[in-house]
Length: 258
Ligand SMILES: C[S@@+](CC[C@H](N)C(=O)[O-])C[C@H]1O[C@@H](n2cnc3c(N)ncnc32)[C@H](O)[C@@H]1O
Image 1 (spheres, rainbow, N blue to C red):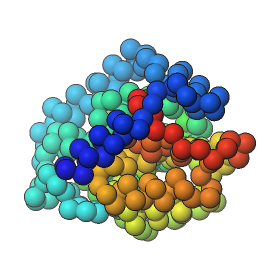
Image 2 (image 1 turned 45 degrees about the vertical axis):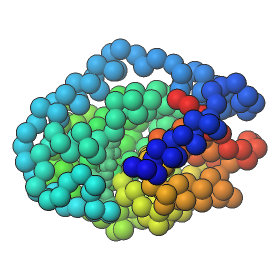
Image 3 (image 1 turned 30 degrees about the horizontal axis):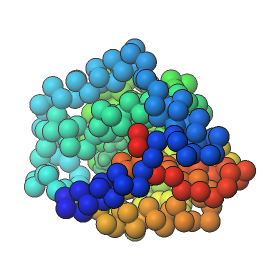
Image 4 (image 1 turned 120 degrees about the vertical axis):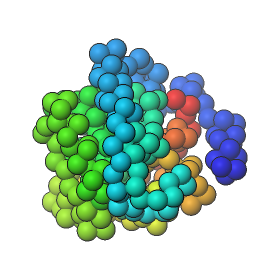
């Protein structure tokens, strides 16, 4: 917690809005996407998806991956509580919908489905996108699948299993326009997923890493990613690290309040 407060204060000191952004690509992204309003109809749909999970008191036995939870002490968990602790926040969901609307990616990969709150936001952002989502816990994924289906989001490709086994197989011979990294929030794993996914990029691909300042190690992973030779533009919004690969852009790092 102390690390998060310290890094947030640092972010506030260094961050800007659109002023001083000279790259037209990033300026447009900030002004017409980050600072735009999410359409009410889309907002209502994502609110409905969240509300249904928050009302779900079913207890499931989850398969735990990655770092031990800072919140849960046992593996028996209530769906509503998982949604509140592990699910994408309302603010991030709104911005994610707008980013997908703006970028119009045709192929999307999500690493870490949980209960499908992020998956629903991706789908709400672009109903025609082809979405693949990876999750290790079968019980959590079952709830996500059922609820996504009940919303009519029934053309999603779900892959169950440890990312160590599923990621490489899933991305083999595929390219993705957009990848949302929201699984294992540890330094080594994050760098490893980034490096594996580099082979799936095109000039237009965009990667988003969740919780880049969740811990000192995640900030170190983010530093590695933004300095990587394949990364041209990187944007730190505090809660996300956004990576752009467009070769026509100058290598530049932005710290932007959303
Ligand atoms: C933060 S949650 C994902 C939240 C979701 N993207 C959303 O927006 O609501 C991370 C998920 O990744 C899964 N996960 C973490 N490490 C994993 C691993 N090594 N293999 C498979 N799944 C993993 C967890 O089970 C958890 O459901």
